[in-house]
Image 1: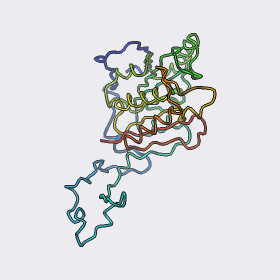
Image 2 (image 1 turned 90 degrees about the vertical axis):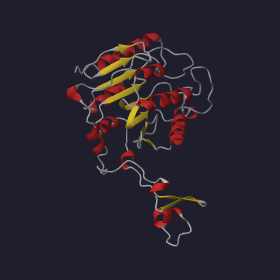
Image 3 (image 1 turned 45 degrees about the vertical axis):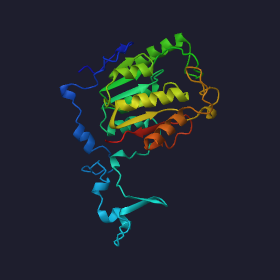
Image 4 (image 1 turned 180 degrees about the horizontal axis):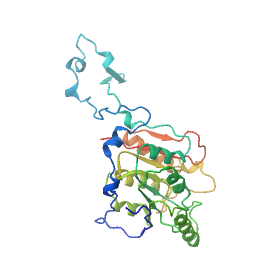
Amino acid sequence: MNNNIDTIITEHHHDNKLDTSVGDDDNINEKKINKNYNSDGVNEQQNNVCECSKENIPTNIINNNDKNDQSNNIISFNNNEKQPYCKPDKRNWLPIIDYKKDIGTLLNNLNYTIGVELGVQKGNYALHTLSRWKKCKRYYAVDLWEHQKNYYDGANVNQNKQEQFLHETKKKLSKYPVTYIRNYTHLAVQSFENNSVDYVYVDARHDYLGAKEDIEDWWPIIKPGGLLAGHDFEDAYEVKGQNWSISIDGTDNGNKAVKSAVEEFAYNHGIQHVVLRRETNFVSWFIRKPYI
């Protein structure tokens, strides 16, 4: 397989999905990834299926009137409700990371091979990631590289600068297995199959609706156990000199921006999100897609 993929995809169709599989010599060993998923001591044989359905619970635990109080097997969620304790799947736990540059090392340790970055600009973060992610076989760099309306962000430079950024990016990443997709993120996603990549980093539009759309659109593309991450964990009122409250259609979302989009998504899906520990400005965040 040619490791240095230097392709710019400018059009996408629903029936023209990108092949994110690898060749025979580069097959991803899913069993190996699952068994060794967390290098911090996850039980390799741990069953990821929760067996707390009612039919699997002893009747003396379900029946509150039973003399044999099984309180050690019951966890209380509120004063009026008791549920059986369900041991969490440790493979879904997230490690603590100090800086976003450490994400590349994490991806390598997890044996991931396929990733996507939304919003590449000059390619600086892609370079940081790929220099540490030695096991990466394919990296999709998705960016419009075009001046956009209603986008009051320092990255929204004129078209001449946009072309220069693309040129710089290709030069920086020339030795890595990169595929360039020059398009809107909501159109680029249509070329990917569900559960086909290990990692997506969201750093395109920073307004609330733009970030929300990217998170929701690209979540299905990530394999169970994969990572959804992104930059700029701030809301509009926290950012000076830029206006992240305005969406591409001109909608004013008030104080909301990336932070609200991430927190709402995590809350609605009942999953954990982690913010990098030692970053203090334009912080990165990440979420692990639970195993099914």
